[in-house]
Length: 266
Image (cartoon, rainbow, N blue to C red; front, side, top):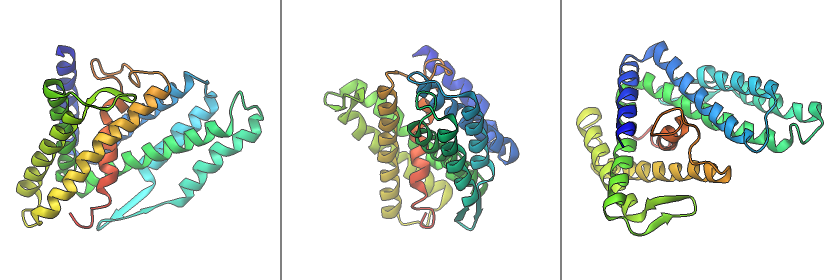
């Protein structure tokens, strides 16, 4: 627990000023964090089957393009450059025929990489887009995620008895999920109502925040199922006491994606 707290304090000390500053420094930081996340996806895949170095290089380049230049935002409307999506499919599917050896690189590998790059690329790009719209949106989403995770952890530890999905995440309980959802919603709604938009109907705000809190927890389970599939406890040991980047950003990734459904409302 001590290691976990110290690591969290160091991460906050490093990232908080960057989040506040925004701009190019923030965009580069988000890109770098996302790049580490992609590396974890590639590394965990490599535990079952090595990925050719050339394919890794292409993957990092495509991810960089997706995060930094694939979307243009204006007045809550997001447009995506489909040339990059086309390039993503072509660049990773053509090598299947060029290698012509399923033991080296197969169509399954290609679609794993396409899914990983597109999923993470869009998610981390949206983090940069939201910061351009306003720091308050980023804070709102992180408040939901952090408070939900924190209270779910302590709630499950103190009164948790019924397992939520033991085969995927043995320690998570239904009681912890309920408590995390309640407090994540309370803190998220309170922050948004006071600091962002007091005129938004509370009923709408509560429903949206409730949905995002639950979505974040199921996002955590999705990433846990990926780790279980590859027989890993954590995506990496980059952050002492916390695991890897994807172990920390699993919930926020899904919360950011879910927030896009409501951006024109909230």
